[in-house]
Image 1: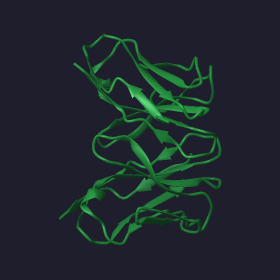
Image 2: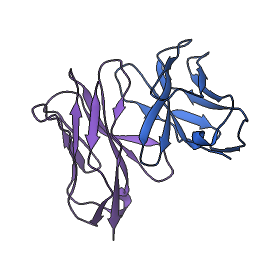
Image 3: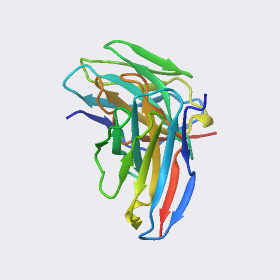
Image 4: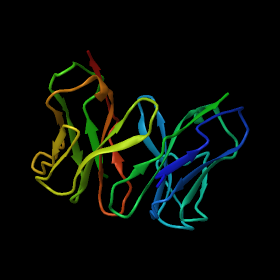
Length: 111
Length: 111
């Protein structure tokens, strides 16, 4: 039981490049989330999903897109990366009202 | 909307000192309350939780009591260790909504 996994762990992009972050969970959770964490800002919700095939915007969705084609996977895409998207990205999942579990994070630097 | 307010850090203590990290919340209903811990370079892990008023959550020597009358969920530990150095996040959730996090409090414990 791996819990929540994220790939890649680290990535460096140039401004304007695109990339996709993958989150996978093996706990059969319905809800999945993408957060970004910046110094002094705590955790901010980017997008979330309440089930396969559904997505919704969080607090800071601009510049990001997501997809939930399979229940166990939640992808976060950056179509044209900007330096302001330099951050640590965390994925999380939970089952209805139960505890939320977090992945180990992806550290992204945009030059 | 719902909100969580935590004391600002860093909190600096010597080993074996008593720890309190304050957390208060604003919510219209009856939320579940959580404390998460983030060790350097890692994702967030659930430390403890309480799902109704007067419940006490406890884990690894940490405790927090859900106080509805004061809308608080303060984290305490009787004797901290160097290994407790981390960032602590208070959070709440109501029903099927997304978690609301505080901004986090950094704890630094010196030998």
